[in-house]
Length: 198
Image (cartoon, rainbow, N blue to C red; front, side, top):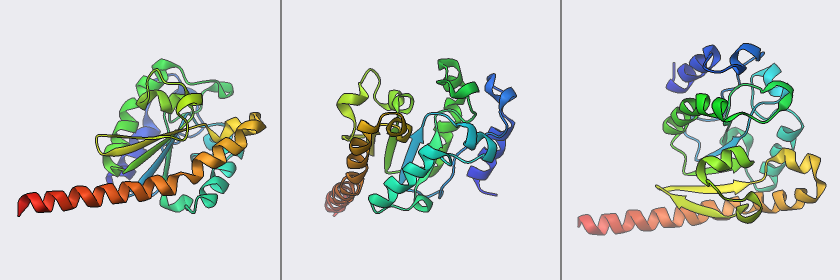
């Protein structure tokens, strides 16, 4: 059994906050263990809670079409949320719930070791860009500790606010360029490391 599968079993048994008592299914995340790209959303909704899979409702369908538009496949990226259980009535996750789930997300990222993390919405954005406004930094890339971080609006935002749809689509189409730049800079770092060792 892989370490990620073991982690999913622990998440399924978690009762560290009140959400554990109300969920139908925990929603740990899904995707390949060696994914270069990880998307982090906010919390599972109704459909996710029923199926135990992230982004399977209307926002998930939009995310899938966004990935296709950027030349990416859902099966090649890893998708998860800041909290692993659905907050009642799809309310925003509480700070205590985010804190209780932090260890699970930390461990997932440790096991996957992605080269790029895309935050979807303000709760995952707050983890990497504290105090920043999504309206100002969406669609921009920053590198921290060898990982490229990109903040984006949550796909659900476009379902409530049609005017954001084009912005989200444009931001998603930037990801292949960010990944290409990332490959170039990694290659340069490797080359300079090799020269240093000569």
